[in-house]
Length: 371
Ligand SMILES: Cc1ncc(COP(=O)(O)O)c(C=O)c1O
Image (cartoon, rainbow, N blue to C red; front, side):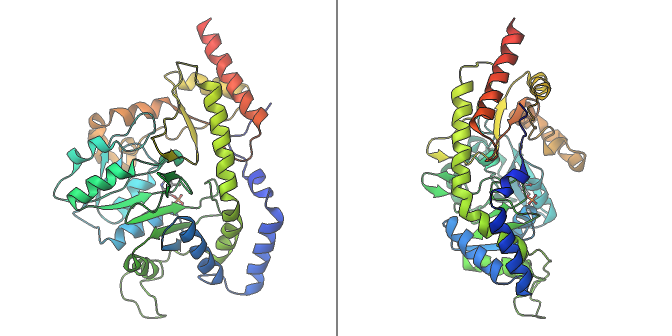
């Protein structure tokens, strides 16, 4: 049996007629940038996130970068980021001219370890940027408490966490601002690039509206140095269709995760994702840990099961961040995760038989190793 890591055609084919109708309506409208579809999506996604405002932008990286710009964070400033994340978290900080300061993560969740944040705060620190990695809520009460004590802003990287909740509150509504990505493979994915900033403060929202549109809210009046980073009408129309199915898709991911956990929990040589109390993850990825990761991945591939690694090289080891390599000594867990994490197939394209097959083959792998 072949098991694809993700099958975007199958994911979107479930909404084929609705998506085609939305695209046709957009074509017929004659209005393709910042129009009624974007406006409606912003209202719907803001409400979904339990936040006052959502602003459509070009992609998730821009959502984070513009959030930092709205806070006037720039050269000379530091922003605390996790050592284990997709590089975009760090790139947003670098893009505004500030310095990313990495803090190590919790091994079980992959999220920033709040107990290590205070030691990384300096007089230059302006913000903390936690990531809800893999769709697992970061420990927001602890992070917000630290931010409050030190007068720091909080920007959530919610690129992988559409609809994730902690203590009944939706991720993206905890911090001052949050950045979401609608890259096609995300839980809420467009048919191309897209992103959104979510915030409660009207002044930040106005700032993002200007920054994404050449620094202008009134045509040909440019109040500041903005950029061009807008969500297309077409993508907004598609996202509106898919937002209506997001809760059902997230529930399917939860069911798959529960099936993996039930099937794999007795394997003592395999680390399973740990969920913090009160959290309802949305399982963008289901990531296990093993010191035999490469052999396990090869064995699964031989049996037709596709897996991926998120992420094989941490940002501080990337050539792009040559100067950050020295921070490796302070990031032992991030270092270890890069060589032990393995993402199993996950998404609404999977049926129970496929999930059971993955569980079976993983058991086979460890049995063969033992004998
Ligand atoms: C954690 C994280 N942050 C930021 C991004 C950036 O999003 P985008 O690819 O839409 O720019 C992504 C996704 O790619 C991500 O996974």
